[in-house]
Length: 119
Image (tube, rainbow, N blue to C red; front, side, top):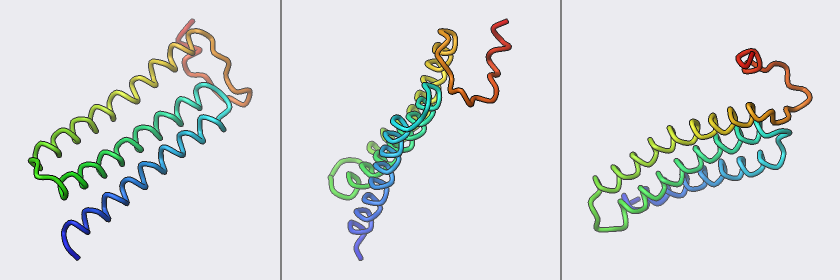
């Protein structure tokens, strides 16, 4: 098996994993009971899905194009780092704003740690 074939198989695996997590995020948006649960599902799925797809693209481009490998890897890693920072922070800010706006919670919510902070 050549190195190109191995890279293609790895790219396929990471692409399939990324698509799987994106599908889970979409299902989570439909199935979850309130805004907070939906935000959690969408953030986790989108972050892991994006990372899987970026790794797949990186592996594919490294094996099939005459561009610098270091350029591809550097750009992909920077986007992955940004995604791991920006998605959770954005979801936290949206959830905090929804909480301040008194967005309804699921009736089976056990505790609300932010409720005591508001006084």
